Amino acid sequence: EDPYATAESMALFFRSALRRGVTRASCAPRALLSTQQLPKSPAATELALRLSETLEEIKEAGTYKEERVITTSQRAEVKVQGTEHAVLNFCANNYLGLSDHPRIVNAAKEALDTHGFGLSSVRFICGTQDIHKRLEKAVAEFHDCDDAILYPSCFDANAGLFEVMLSKEDAVISDALNHASIIDGIRLCKAQ
Image 1 (cartoon, rainbow, N blue to C red):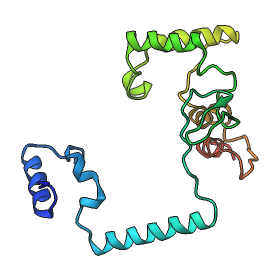
Image 2: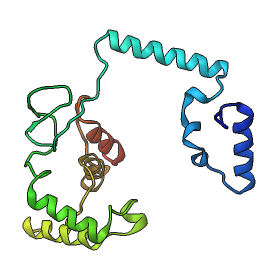
Image 3: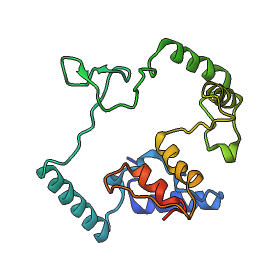
Image 4: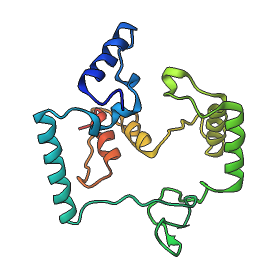
């Protein structure tokens, strides 16, 4: 019998955790994270019903997006689970084909051995690793610039770009269909 199957046993678990000074729900056993095992309030039941109906409407409209499971590295041709042949990949950001280039993969393996799996936070909280500074220096030298800044994603780069380039005296005309990162970047800057 599952000791966390009833509301009373869950309450006992959380009271015990609170007495020990644990205040975060992340201390819960994995079994508690399943909504199937949580007692259903009328509001939770109503929410589940509405979500289920909304998902069904999205599927009926043909706009539900199934997740594609790629079983190869991200490159121009990929193998997708459930297909017999490789398919052309036009949606990745791997424009230069570097994500599975042997030199890049080997450098990443070496960095894992020497530096672990990254900072586990953002630079202004944890600091910057020496390998990031070396890469920024190499990028700056390649572009004949004084300095360069690495961003973890293009979204972050776009979000930070406009604030440093534009002032309140500038104006931006932007299409509503621009990428969300461009729209967010414009909203974050002082331009009109």
